[in-house]
Image (cartoon, rainbow, N blue to C red; front, side, top):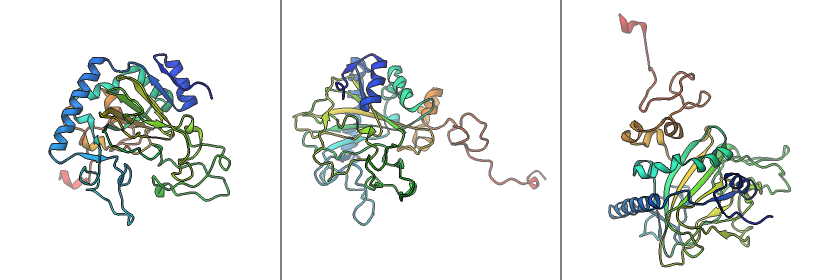
Length: 328
């Protein structure tokens, strides 16, 4: 394997890094002013949600992101709080929580790299912040397209698409399945302060996007990971198949990161923007943003009525029941 990715402004180098290692580090993707404004807005939003008892807090020793159900399969809505051991704070749906956040979606160098990985059309799947605070434990390694069916041998059995879970894999290894699932999701981590190994910089396994399987906590326990370390303003673009997770924060300060996840246009998004985006955001949205939010029809998918329409209108409904008698 060649030298691991370094900070770069060269998009051709960044593309090559993503292809080979599964990630790239784009230097100065955000200006100093943008970093400052986003950091201020994020801290204010996070503090308000915390004060109102609305904070989502994970990263504790007894609860981890993704563990939404207990051993009986029941949802655990009150688990992700400081009282229940949560340390890190997530701030969801940033699309509604400040114009300054929406600016990152139009930053051309990063969008060029997303185009490189996902192609001509894709959706914004989620837009959130992860504030890794002192005492937060390392997240289990995972991929962000766990829902993508993995390749299976023609004579083998497979997990049905609707039965795939974060923890249920078909158990194939690279010897069983030389083919790998295509990339269908891309993450961008926008650093609002310096990321270091000590403050919980994202940990990942370079090249794991080509392993053809998801990590197994027991089998891969000894696997060596690296911490992504870079200055504030850096954007880390990583393939949705790469094995990664938030690092443990053993420093004395918090690590602030915005996370935008994108997926192919045929997949369900994590955050439901067609329902949840604020009206004022939609009214001032560009056509590009409307497309990212799922209001652009893709090959007939996502429509309300005719598959030949280009966009749907927020709140649009179908014609409903009609009768010629209605005009009599």
